[in-house]
Image (tube, rainbow, N blue to C red; front, top):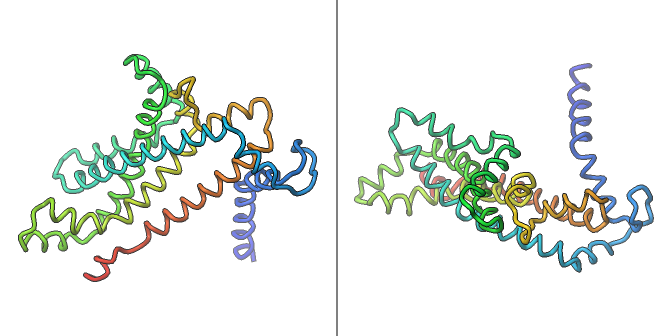
Length: 263
């Protein structure tokens, strides 16, 4: 009997601990009262006022720009790096792979301080450029890991057949390898986009006085009290993040059409 009910109770408690704060934020985004301690009835007015808040919308635009550019560049760097490390015949391949994934294992506050020191040493103006550079550094490993895992499980005989038929290495990559790893590339890109959009710590260290991202903006406003517009904005960001993660998982699990035909 213990074996039957204990896992279920444990799972329920774990889900409550993880998602109860999220549920509370979502519920109070529809609260008619400005106070989180009082329920004043159901309303959608905070969502309308959120879109009328120019500072929040400007921060949202900055976050989307940073996430889009950093993920676009990270996709190219991470994909090429994954293909190169899988195809390379290096004795130190394991060490190179470990170095490529270190940014996601180092605490963000340390990375933020490192970027702050480096950018200050180089006299780079803090703003959009420093944000993009910093976000690329921790977005690349996500794409690298996902694409590398896809390449490791790919049938190499498909590429070898293309080479035997006279295809050049570049042609083989474009026509064979890239379509086969594309689900992994898209999955890693969406995951990196979600991580970039939600980043607070690193962005706090490298942002400038005239450039503010949405998570940093929310963090600065929470210090003086959580407004209903923040609850509404957090709810929308949570929904977008969950949607990106779900789509990323489905794309990553999808089997490419060319591989289906060859199997």
